[in-house]
Length: 517
Image (cartoon, rainbow, N blue to C red; front, side):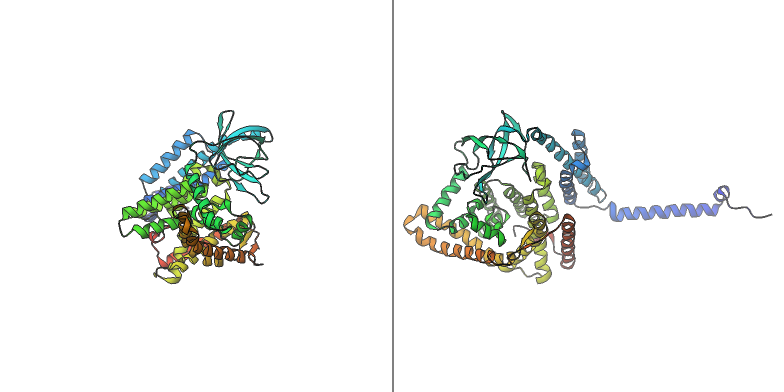
């Protein structure tokens, strides 16, 4: 008789097959458990759960329309997922943190968009609104005053969002914190602005009393500086000291843009870094508490005087978190600090994630300064602490590289002379700030000697303006670059790979990458 094929009944009745079967299952289970133990159920620091959740918040806010999430149920689900991830800080719960962050961001973005839909029915209609001027009045290239309005209301009912006003002429009697009543044809906005009005009719200007006290102090001190320092150097010096870029003459402002120096006269993280480092050097040897208190006081005072603009708020948040970590002897990893600051800002105002170039450039520059710059120093120069020039060169190069892809897409031009101009001017900015402060103080305290005391200030600021104009007038100062979003993505992947390579070689510790060091 021929042998019959082996069927299920034959195999199942074989004791040897059972041994192989259960042995295979045991081996597969052991491998699976080992992988889980090795990779997925290992503990991670809770800060990484927070970081991943914050990344999810930013992405979810930016792409809320794709996710289509909303309602209280989604918010509660997101809260539970993030809470679970932080409570069980395992590798596998990073996925829960990411999903929770995506849901929270989509919930916030969708909720804000529902509020902004009130504008859609008003577009191309003449409306009468009221609002508060949120920042200093600006003057565009045509000499027209432009205003950024917040706290919008119509017929006494508040409306979410911000509005851009272009007055069609120069108006000098409007300042920050004024409440305006205006009318005009409402048009779609751009960037973070929900709507815009061109050539509105200003019906009423109300200035609250006592009004913006910090603004009054700033203008009072700026006028004192202008009594002893000539223009345009006086405006440049005031810009250094209080971040008042909008007072710069148009030609000097354009020269600073071409030379890649605009950041030094914009109230931003650079100003706060100078103040914090000054406070630490003055009081660190006295006590850590006094050093932190003085740095925090300077930071808050500077934000109050300059106004809590979006760039200033972002810089203050990052600086405050870094300063608090330093005081308690902790280190915030840059890959945790940046997502946390980004998530907080988009939760406050989701429009930042919908195409605000300033928001993108701000955090790109932060990433360059606190991540890439220390890695460059450690990779190319070892453990030797960088001097002022080398530190400025490294930070400028890193910030320029990380903002270059965004600049290429948003504006189509980049500065070729930024590194050289920053190297010649940036080391002298702290000295210029000190001299401008002394000059203004001399006018207020000892007027007879104020002109003599202001002479070094004038000389230094003239050198700075001449240097900026020299670089701006070079034929090769700027280049046009055409880039798309795929190019930007590839560029950031390349920058990230470079940073990962340098970190692998240097093993630089996170506490050595601190914005206030």
